[in-house]
Structure formats: C-alpha cells, structure tokens
Length: 184
Ligand code: FES
Image 1: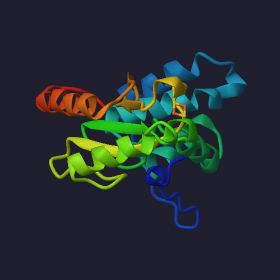
Image 2: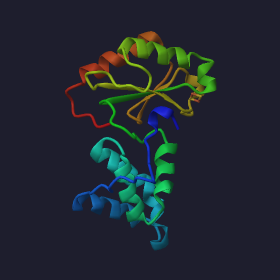
Image 3: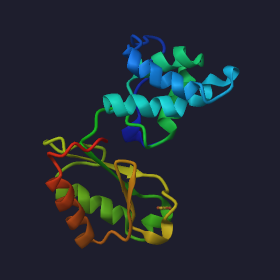
Image 4: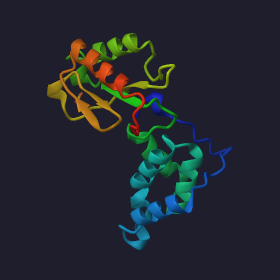
C-alpha cells in the first residue's frame, strides 16, 4: 500500500454509509451471486471495482456500505481497499500513472523515471496536475522487473522500458486524449 493511497477510516467517528442506486446494487448482487451464500465477502474486490468505476474512487462511506452489504467488518473491507494499489482512495486525475519503485526497478532507473515525470508534469508524487489530467504515484512490483523502468496507466496499460523519450511520447499521447471519455 502506498501512503498516497491511504484514506482514513475513523471507526470512532464513522462516516455515513454511502447510498447507491438500484442499478448499482444490482451489479453488486450479480457479483455476490457468483459465490456460495455464506461467502458473500468473496465479492468484495469486484464490488470495490464497481464503486470505483461509478465514483472514480472509493470513499470511507462506500466501504461502510459494502461492509454492511457483504456482511463483513468495515476494517476487513478497508484492508482490501488499502492493500491493492488499483483502488483509488481519493479522487484522481483522468490518467493515473503508477511508476514501479520496488527494488529491482529502483536498480534500473525506476526512481529516476518517477522523478522525471514529477518534474515534467510539475506535480509531486501522489499529486494531481492542476488541470486534473494526471495523477502520479509510486507503484509496487508489477511483475515485469526485467522491463524496467515500468509504469501502469489507469491500472490497465503496462508501459515498459520507459526511457525519457518514451515518457515524453506517453504524456503527449495521453494529453491529446484529454477530451476523450477515458475511464480511470
Ligand atoms: S520491481 Fe518493478 S516490476 Fe518488479
């Protein structure tokens, strides 16, 4: 879990559980139906993904809703949402870029790539550009250590061997998509 990903689930002053439309609850139900009746909690990752697709990020209130819906402790939902980098626990830009900074990538310019993008975009690590287009975050091992420096765009698109030229090209390409309906 990245510190930039952490939200606060204050169980002493819990937020109000979010509300979802019947349509979204039906999507949760379809995920729950894939598991035996006494294992509803197995759908937690899929339900968190649905919340993120709908809202762009997962809030503490969303976690409380899912905890009640899936009949599991709120902290158990929070443990899942904070364990995986793919869940956004705060609003992010249209393009979220995670640069792998684990040791094997560190040894092959992972940190240099993160620093380069930070300077190029004019945003600190964990931050979002003023135009709301890019969020820059460090990432955990993406299973492509031999391809370092590597980065993931919007949790889906893996970019390998990212030289400064390739990073420049990537930012240029994504910037040109700023008005397209790309979902994070
Ligand atoms: S350490 Fe970066 S992909 Fe494995």
